[in-house]
Image (tube, rainbow, N blue to C red):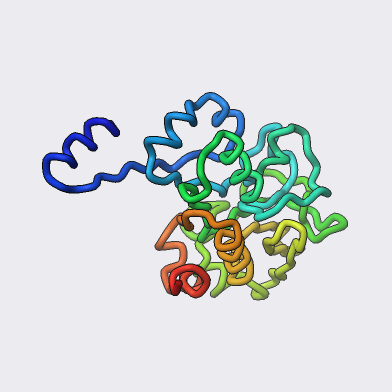
Length: 228
């Protein structure tokens, strides 16, 4: 594809770009030809979210962060892969394969993941047991758009916001609803945007526009990155 597009570009005087959205999971990345991909792709959008959610299975036995910036060493780890489930580790993984930082765009989540039947435990639901997705969601159980969280859940209706200063992200917990929600807010998006700038990455990508339909999180990205 790269060769064909370059040939076409030589004919019509245009430059054609190729990009991909890629998993951040080592189990998959180790099987790709990154020497060739890093050369032929113009940029790579890292899907550095959905690291944890109410998905069940051996990697999600307890509640966790949807899109942590950094690793929290207190996170229960049942697999080596879990240690790499954060933005910083994902970027480092691509770098270890020789992909230039300038071609890497870190993924930002404009939505949250909700867990159901979560006891308060010692840390307001964080790293606690759960059973399935939360009973509520914006469009489906266990998935919350940021605008919905801001209007109806963040320090409202029995939900209290907490911050994991080690991982760089917040979460919500309601003891009455037995619900834990991992999400992003203005502060965590600002931290990630600053990280992108400091580490001289290519930029940011996000999923997705409608989750932040009033532009609250996108404004944070623009303030840090877009005004340069």
